[in-house]
Amino acid sequence: MKLVFNKVSKTYGKTKALIEFSSELEPGIYALLGPNGSGKSTLMNILTDNLKADSGKIYYDGEDVLKMGVRFREKIGFMPQYPGMYGNFTAEKFLWYMSALKGMKKEDAKKSIPDILEAVELSDVAHHKIASFSGGMKQRLALAQAVLGDPKVLVLDEPTAGLDPKQRIAIRNYISRIAFDKIVIIATHVVSDIEYIARDVIMLKKGTVVDSGSPAELIAKMEGAVYSVPLLESEVVDFQNKYRVVNISKNENGVVLRTISDIKPTENSVSITPNLEDYYLYVFNNDI
Image 1: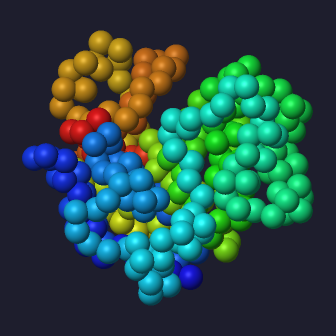
Image 2: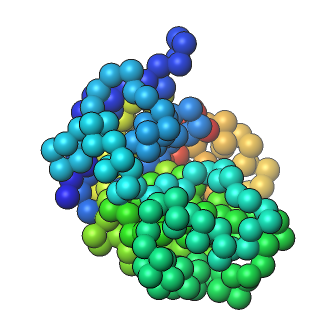
């Protein structure tokens, strides 16, 4: 199974939202990282046929997805960032409704729906109306409808938005578990959610791929460029004007700054192990 993007472009008026995007994806988890306006949503909407590209092609196992039409749409599960739901439906009824729209057999839906509700931790509210759900619960239900029917291509826009840390870990683990025979594309601003599960990361900036690779490959580019810098509180503002600060924490002696720098910032700075968020901030510093 392979999904190929070949020079896909999209323009809104004078704004180039996506510029000749090309990539080849096989089963596994792929993360789309980039600030607002980078082209992530445009790419996902073109893939799910909610938007037409100006130029370029997308192929699934060698076939043009536009020519495949319904055959390709049946292979896709899509979780939009702001899903529309019927408030008077219960969670279970909503999934039954979505299973019908997807053309699932009743026997398959009957078997799948309880398992999916349990996986996204909604079993106990299966018969509650969606109108009574919190934002995080709706988010998990949106993921549930996306995975319903065992799609081969799963497209997730900010899947952990609004979830608490425990729920985020549970959803992250669930996505990892089902990704072995799927192509999963995740667009997110929560870098930590994909650092340990993504096969590859695609970094988008103003419609263009600025870098891509495995998390380990991207993190390696920051070796020797991330420091722990102890300072007095009175020194912080002046330091921030000179260096890129990722995090500030207090201790009994003052503060400690996590800093990105090509040179050692101060004599008592200590080089520390970088992470993917460091690289994200390094690449997109002027855009966030």
